[in-house]
Length: 166
Image (cartoon, rainbow, N blue to C red; front, side, top):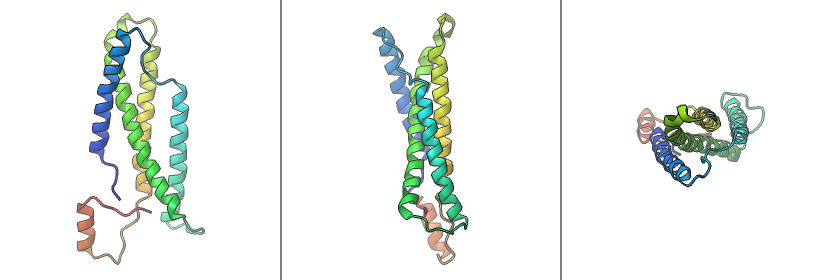
């Protein structure tokens, strides 16, 4: 299985940033509200992050030797996928709200209500946390290298970008 690709996260953030900027420009021209997520979505992001961390800690404790119970391999795989989804969703939300900020910041002196800017900044912060948790929990799911795998095979696997996960 492949790890999270930082290049793909950057591409997703750039594309969604451009989309967020264009959506904000078009919404403002049509006198529509700025397309920023509400503050309640931070609660949803927090729940997703908390679930990812809790599941990741269970996998990490099993990996580090606390094996009083058998770890369900499906749970470990789902935790790994959840960590990746968390990182990619965070990159998407980061780009979208940075695009909104890029459109709104030049008009900050003309605004009497800065709610949209504060909401976008809060969402950027939450999305950075999502990406960080995705990377960390993905590392929790990584298995240590096997002692019986020859070094040449391990080096070949590492150069291909494939790693073993719990």
